[in-house]
Image (tube, rainbow, N blue to C red):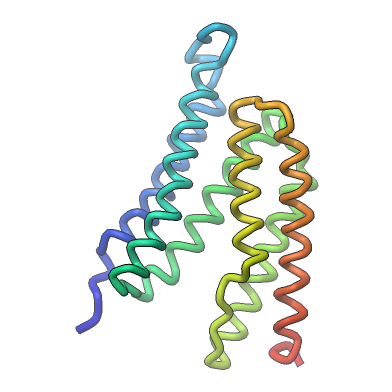
Length: 182
């Protein structure tokens, strides 16, 4: 009997999508919430909610693997929720002049390329699993975004590493999928 699409891992993935507007409200209307000891309350709340949303990504994957709960909805919503979360927050950080737009374009471009490769692979009955480089890229992006949200020094340096990992893992996916494109 197939698993229900409304299982805990999928609900955790969906929660990431629904937390994005919450993060964006606090981040983009940040001056409306005041300050505590020079720190913007809107940034603080946005950062905490981003951390919670990021933790749901680890939790949904762990639960799905542990209980062997795999659904087509999960295969669809989990990576989509990750992309929506990261791209939305990075876009808001561009608006706040904390992150350059060209880096967002690099990150989005890689996501389109890898998603396209996965669609081509799926049409051939091949599954392209997340690579170690892709996972490292994601973790580095999340750490960098948290640092930028909280204005922690070194956040841009971490994001430079994340962009380099983004390009490297994207090239790796293309290289490993070259036969599918032939």
